[in-house]
Amino acid sequence: MQIFNFKDTIAFMALKKPAAALSIILVVGSLVSLAINQLNWGLDFTGGTQIEVGYENAANLEEIRDVLESSDFADAVVQNFGSSTDVLIRLASRDGVKPAELGDAALKVLKEADETAEMRGSSYVSSSVGEELTEQGGLAMLVALICILIYVAMRFEWRFALGSVAALTHDVIITLGLFSVFQLEFDLTVLAAVLAVIGYSLNDTIVVCDRIRENFRKVRKGESEEIINISLTQTLNRTVITSLTTVLVLLALFFLGGATIHGFATALLFGVLIGTYSSIYVASLVALMLGISKEDLMPTEVEKEGADQDAVL
Image (cartoon, rainbow, N blue to C red; front, top):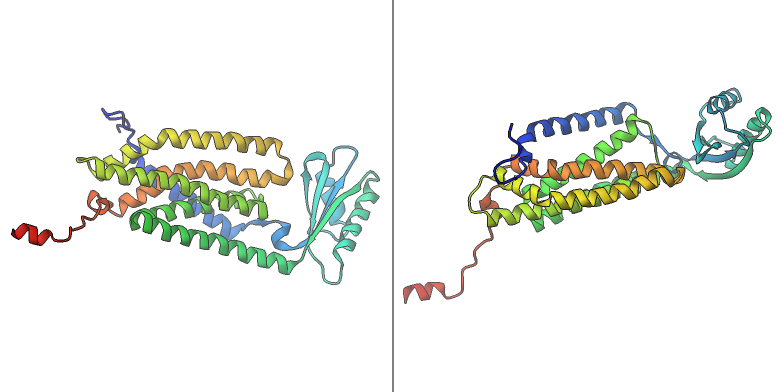
């Protein structure tokens, strides 16, 4: 398989079948995981009480879970928060029990097991608010995709519109699949990151589509696949530099930003990587499979007024 031709154009579309197979596997795997494991919804969506507990020494999460489970808190979710001495505990809402009382009861149990345990903070979200946030968050992503479909169809061509939306849907599903497979907490910051991934991926896809349209009009000879390869090669430097600089910033947030934005940085970091891949393969590949050609992108000639009379004279 020849990847470079004599014009130093990278033959991206030579790998279209492996790329399509990889995307299908990732999307199907993500959907299966979302159906079976679902998402590990954060407190913003499920509702309940969240307390931050600090210890003098490194906390043993397994012991804390055992203590809470033996004291009628079997549904507690325990994880480190920021450092090994800080612990984040999420408790589901209970009928007839106030959120503050629920947090105090859990802290009392922990103090009996370790006197150094102390409350560092607490928060509460009602289940009705959580359900509303879940519904509104899903609606926000759906509306964003529909608006993008309409914009790209008006700006370019319907084949590019379908390719762009396919790439964005591809990115969102696989990013959600990552959180489902590894059961990473999905809260409002992660939802914001997913919407940011849509915007980032769209920007990259628009640049690629614009260059493909331009080259279809400039290059007189060449098949659709060849012109797409030329366009992707011309935009490769821009794509790599943009993605690399963004990834460097996200790596700093991932390792140094703390637990509060860890999920946000994770979603964006993975989303940028998968978005770069989809802008190269998914969007252009879908347009190619739909039969995009030079004739579809040539500007419509406008007949000048009085041309018929001039021809007669």
